[in-house]
Length: 402
Ligand SMILES: *Cc1c(COP(=O)(O)O)cnc(C)c1O
Image (cartoon, rainbow, N blue to C red):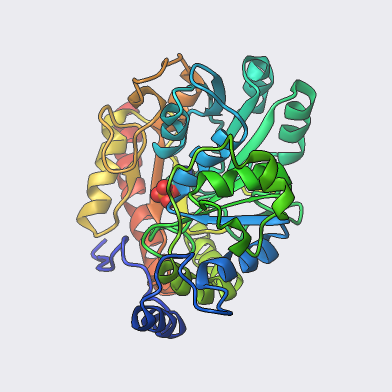
């Protein structure tokens, strides 16, 4: 195997020209603060919210500083307080338990299955421990939302969805983020739209929307929002809701609006790349691909594979051999977390449960980003490299065992 991949796993596409033009217009007039609008001007941020509400089919939308901020705000709007328990994923990104911890609340972790989704049997068993579930569709894998919602409705648990990897995805035709009472999204560079930092929160609940808007730092200027409930709803919450500044600004909103318009096309491009990787890795001995349910319309912006029950040394060997060929795989089973691979037992500010089934899955879990700067040929090449390196290590292990 002499092929080497030379692309960058962290290089996204540039901002569309239309976004650059709109950003320059904002820079030229100087009104970057979302509430700094000229007479008759609606403002990029308010328009972005209106467009995002329409895109997700939500009554209300708030744009804010980050996805993590959206999750903190969602939990606060729901009344989560210090000391409360909040159900969440054992396998997710650090800002998810971080959002819970930022309120002084305590995460109750629910494990991950071989499908890389929340273990719903375990959720059912733990559902009586909390009133809120912060559900992360980690790496874009959506669990059986019909069963999840039935479990939560039955137990009186309200669901906040972390859609950092599922903006543009659907479950049984319903946009991700629209099953629970609040959906949260990220506009950070590695997600599906890119403003460097940024986030959204959507809901159909008028009181939650009003609280979230005041929390985000609206002062008494909430009437400048275009995807918000009427002023009388704010009258009910405005004196009892703190301002915890975390607004979106007009510059980032200007960059995002054209990206939102092309999001569905981008999703198709991501999925073509995902399928090229999947096709190239199908049937590799020792390697397990993640099945995608028919009713899950996913966004293949990252790719996962499992080397289930492999010895740690062999997994490490695959990672380093692939790295030598230019293919950057992140491993969630290492003893020490690196980059974004921290996991429930890395978050020691809260109780760390024993989750042996999740440990088994994470010990074999390899992950890579799939930026749209990769061509379909790049993806086929990456698959050939992984296939060859997994094969080489697997053959060696089989020979030693035999
Ligand atoms: C990126 C990410 C977040 C947080 O988004 P930020 O905008 O970076 O705060 C939350 N959850 C998951 C799963 C993520 O990948």
